[in-house]
Image (cartoon, rainbow, N blue to C red; front, side, top):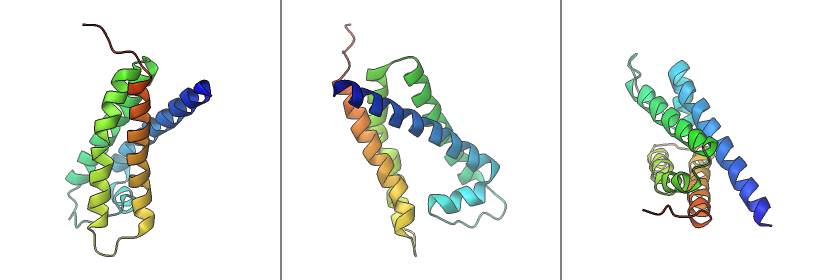
Length: 132
């Protein structure tokens, strides 16, 4: 059972990291569609600064997750994921505050919060703390 939990957590985390890389790249390549899929619509007037910031943020976190998995830095990964839940939680609140939001735009953010908390807690509790 322990091995199944370890493999499941690994694959969920890997898919999440790769998914964030995809989402981040999408905010650079097709910012308006990515923004709509995120759950908000802003008047950009051709200025995609917000979308590029979001793309950089998601790309960074996706890359950190993949690198920590690749290096087998389980505890560090948990220490990134657990407090990192604040990012999708904030995204959830932003989408929720939009007039005319749809529940379908909330689910990915809520799922990300659950993944961050569950996988982060797993990695922290199932890895050894480094000796100083």
